[in-house]
Image (cartoon, rainbow, N blue to C red; front, side, top):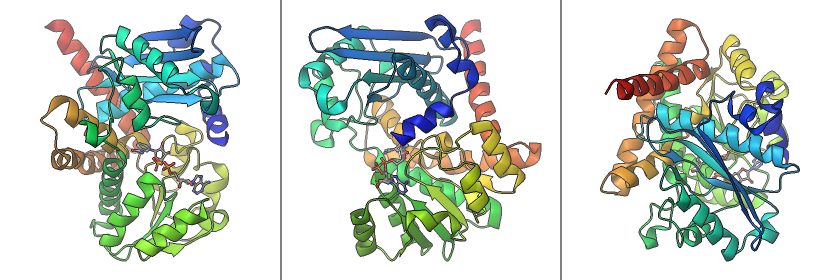
Length: 373
Ligand code: NAD
């Protein structure tokens, strides 16, 4: 619940004040919004296609019990735009899209509803490709795939590219190394104090990479069993969530919920780098990225560092897939991070602004080249 409430606060005013559905598409310059309704299954879904200049719009399907349809629309518009930036910056032949299904996941998630939803996805003929997100998983994708081929992240046993988390974690690990290189002149992590907040799917894989390099890893989680499991597998220091931000560290790696970087936490943070996998880490994107920059804390934009899972999907879509190849492609995140941080330093603007500029530059140059052709 908290995540969503915070995410809406994070939404620019221009997007919250719209008067008509078309007005809502203007601030983000969205291409298409599709409303899906089915009386029999109770399906209410919105698919937002933000931008398809670089390729088909790809993004997961989230199920959430939004208080108002308007909140669902705001969420899907914001998330789909984020996917455009993520794909553009990772140099992928993909655009940005996202979908939300409105309702209580425990009541509405049935085979019938997911298949009906799959039929709607199919009507877009590949302009939108879906995958898992909050409250949907690989098994739900199998059900949706009974109605459409435009689904990703199916289980490996069924010929899919499986759980994206190891690739997201690997990219995050490389992004951390790039930031460490920028700040300390070498990307060796041995002895570096790194705090991983949230040891779920991505966080646990990330800890394994960091421990292999003999970093001093501090972990926290709200689920005690996850902490004991990670402590059994690796040499880590466990910190309780309420004191985590007070621990002096070189790198703070948020891998739990969004909006953990806000006025209250920035005042407590003792770190040189913020680099983690969580989506929407900054409570107020532009302002908090500026505050971090002014305080000399290097922030690696979330949509840049956490693109490994998307790169894995892209590898499956456009290459003869192997996990090795997907890991190889994910390695590009290191150079992209370093490039963004170098330009940030040179132009004296926050890395978030640089990352957004780079994404927009790529989309604009491809768009004008295609227009000329
Ligand atoms: P997950 O649900 O498996 O793990 C999240 C972990 O954070 C859980 O262990 C949870 O208990 C913990 N947590 C929740 N609230 C916390 C708090 N206040 N303090 C400390 N720990 C807390 O999710 P995941 O798939 O590992 O994803 C982690 C983050 O990365 C999310 O923000 C997700 O959106 C983002 N992300 C994930 C992927 C992916 O491939 N899974 C890709 C891109 C971005």
